Image (tube, helix red, strand yellow):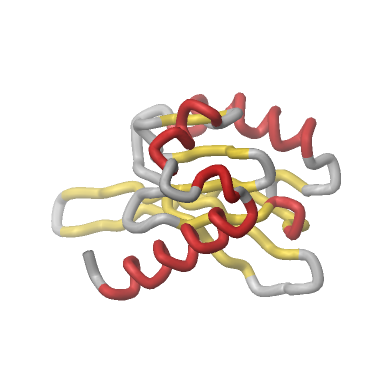
Length: 130
């Protein structure tokens, strides 16, 4: 794994351990305790954090988010087109968009419907969508 991903993953785990001491040394239980877990997309919603663990682990405290949406990017290589899906988000008091990469499946949008509902209910101040 490239250094950039390792550094991001370490920072994500440090943030999670600080927010949730019960995960320290027990992170494998995270998926069983999560409100939303999709193994194929590599996405977890645990308490106040949205977590992705495809190409490194990223954790986002949703209490700090103003806007959250899904972006599909098509990458053309020779005769093959690949899709990449990312959560894009804007934090409160910041205008810079940031992203979290998901593992691509054929039904990403359908798989995320439950997550969008959970986030809308739990974090009504987050604007979901572009």
